[in-house]
Length: 407
Image (cartoon, rainbow, N blue to C red; front, side):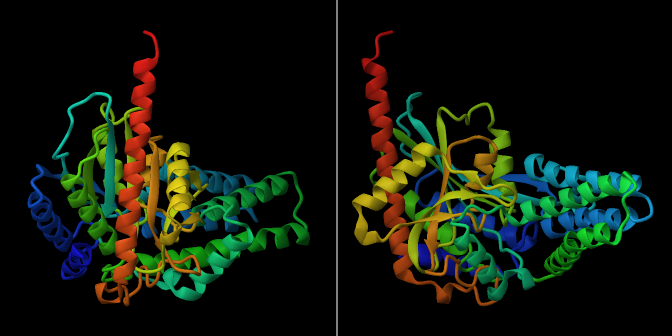
């Protein structure tokens, strides 16, 4: 399948981290691939600060300083902790924070393929199929033992767990409460022991983030070269048999790893035309091995629910096509659809997942295209096409209902 060939070709752009020359060369190559389908293609450059591990390392370092300071000055320590919490929340929701400003700025690109067979109807849904083509960082945090431990925690909680950034925020809030207690004059040994667990957790988190900030990029043949391949393959198939009530746009984003900065830029630039009532986003995550899946909720802070209607359609496809073995996934990662949920655009992430709930070899040096299971890619494409058909049928029902409603 062409999707796997695209993943293999992307892997040849070694060290294509966000803002690198290799990422820019990959963008130009992908533009050529999409142009060969007959679509009009744009390469949109934007400036960003993609070093998210270093960004949050600054925030956590401020929180650790606040924890140490509160022993002698609860007021000063509490102020530092409050500032760290505000910075973490601001960075997640608006993408701006002092920690972000202390990292290097670089240029990245989005590759946008406009609809080829648009029906030119204001009533049609604008469906954005997106995947990130840059390579993510390797590091200790992405080693299988830590990922399996996090997966086991999610499994026991049945998916109702906060993201890793949520645990950071929770630790800071815990320390803020301790600082308030100290401010009331309580400085017993018990208070000190209460302060110890979140402080140790933040120090360990700081060490992991600094390791990530200085680590190399993975080959990213699977995560997310396979997702890019599936997105392009979906575009080809939908161009051959275009849906009648959906206009499909393909957006391959740079600086997408973990944070989805590319899609955030794309949505901000089009905030006047991409609105919740006329648009939806289908984010293609890694499709390396395992069963096709869709994400019910995802997020680094507090996991956000996917759009109710798109969840319903995905569940319907899974029920009507049992041979595909589609499963539901809750939390565990950010798919390329997540920035759209922050922007309140209906969105759903799909991909494939192994039996242990993990994407095999994600953010590891072994994440090569040679390790991709071709069957997983084929099933992901099939699931994606069926989902788009279901979305098209849903839009047809909505349009018929609107036409039957008296003015």
